[in-house]
Structure formats: structure tokens, C-alpha cells
Image (cartoon, rainbow, N blue to C red):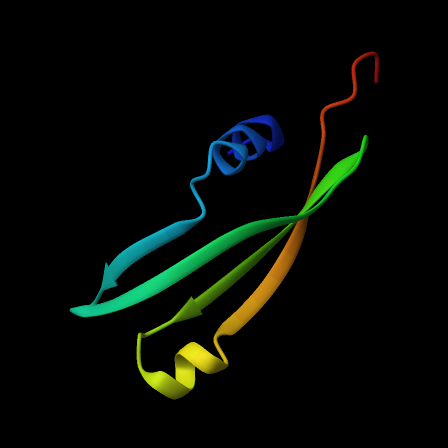
Length: 71
């Protein structure tokens, strides 16, 4: 997904998802941490709904560069 598509979906409030993988259910939370002129910084956290994993979900973040006109 392009940076602009990602930014549109996250700004529209699509931040929480329930996902099923190999018969297990997971909760996924995606948030914009930074939105600059050059990039967006996005965090992703995943837990399986159990108490301890919900308190300390697996988490990571990534940067997606925005398209710059004229380059």
C-alpha cells in the first residue's frame, strides 16, 4: 500500500482489527506516531487477547516515505 493510501485509511479511523490466523484470533492496533512533510511513522501492536499479552503486546514501527513531486 502506498504512503498516501496508508495515511488515508489511518486518518479515517481504521486503527483496530481482529484477525484470525491458523485458527487463532489476534487483535491488531495500528497508529500514526508522526506525520511530517516527508514521511509517516506508524506503529503496529499485536496481542492474542490474553491478559499478559494484552498488557505487553508484540509491537514494532515503520516509516513510510511520502511521494515527492518532481523527484
